[in-house]
Image 1 (cartoon, one colour):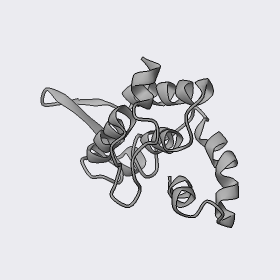
Image 2 (cartoon, one colour):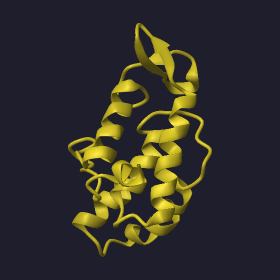
Image 3 (cartoon, helix red, strand yellow):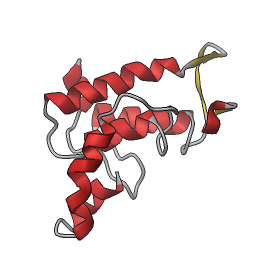
Length: 130
């Protein structure tokens, strides 16, 4: 996510050269955690922040969102997600439900994930996969 944001502000920065490899790493199916900053939602958002997504990117985002259900835990008529190390439910932005909601909003509506990270370039990566 940071490399994509850097590329928007300083496209010639040497770190921007690593974006294709980072993007390929985000295509992988396995993610041990559901969270925004260290899990599946972060992978999906990072893919959505890049250039206009091709079919491979859209498929990977769709798969990440589908696999997010693996971590969902019913709680009081809603859903919750485990946080760091999957030891307890978390509602924070970093590892829990708040970050997952921000990620879903960014992918669906192109909203900003966090003020310093910006939104997804494609207005609706998730909607394009439906």
